[in-house]
Image (cartoon, helix red, strand yellow):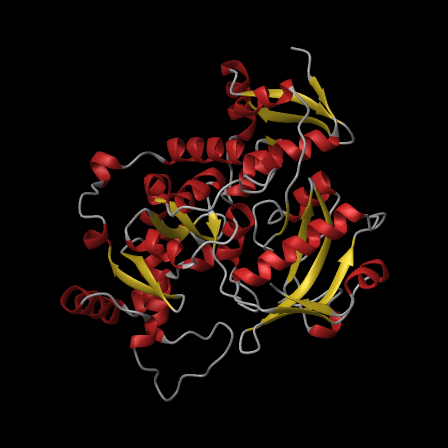
Amino acid sequence: MTNLSLSLTTARNLHLSAQGLLHPPTRKPRYTDIVDTIRRMSLLQIDTIHVVARSPFLVLFSRLGAYPETWLGEALATGELFEYWAHEACFIPAEDYRLLRHKMLQPQAMGWKYNAEWMAQHQHEVAELLRHIEDNGPVRSADFTTSPAHKPGWWSWKPHKRHLENLFTAGEVMVIERRNFQRVYDLRHRVLPEWDDQLHGISEREAVDEMLSNSAQSLGIFRPEWLADYYRLKRAPIKATLARWLEEGRVVPVNVEQLGQLYLHHRLVAQLEKPLKASHTTLLSPFDPVVWDRRRALELFNFDYRLECYTPEPKRKYGYFVLPILHRGALKGRLDAKMLRKEKTLLIKNLWLEDKVKVSASLLNDMRRALARFAQWQGAESIVFEHLPAGLYAAWGSGWQLD
């Protein structure tokens, strides 16, 4: 088969199409869009930083526009989603529980996420905790007191939190809701009373095959080495899987300008029948699938991006929680923002445009609308800029009131 030849712009647009970021939403979001959007991405990574909207809410906003944040919690509470380790901690569609069950049954292979020595050392306390949940219902780690000898610290969790985290990794408890974004745990057999490992479980090999398939579909276009990172798979049979997919016609090889050979998911081939144009401008979370693989973002979008919230402030190049700016198919900038909730103000501490990005009328108008939508969704009544590139400052000044 002769490889199709694609421009770099087309390759980017195919990826954004697969991710639901090629065009802005054409209607108001509906509750069902929450799970449908996560299915399209396969995973929604969780992070708790909330200087602006928390990451999972922001990832959905980038695709759906303004929606009630409570919808995500409702989807978790009704069992349409569940939480587990995938790319990292993620919200995952309920039907994909079977893809990750084999990890729960072998928690000792989960690295730092499960401490077998701790569980053995505290087996009686863990058993008491499970009985407590059985008798008294769901719990949060905040429901339990801390001993006077406990020393606070970044990873210095109190014992019951460690018990619950280990039980979560082992699949003995599940997250049934979040209260103020804190996990609420219940016993697995109460959350999934119908589940039977013998009847419903699949082998690790089958699970890995389906996760690779999900990854290919959610990426849309990919290098082989991009596949395994999507679910953070180790020792995945990428070469053999790709060979089988090529025979089955599930992917087609394409030659991409500057990048060489990539693979295109068959569902996107029809989109090549006419020019593919990107029209969406929005802000992305640092944990958006488009940028969570930093090497992929660099190769595909020429966007060199690092998350610096864990970097000491003097060593940061940009800022604490920097959001990439997507504009019509390209990552054209980034900004460091903070939502001042009492003042109802979105503070943009700094905004940077990528090299060779021209401040055009289209860029100014699209970005202004995107910033306004983002701020209003969070309840802001004004936007304030501390630092802007000269071309943006000339047009925007130090900020504006929102309608």
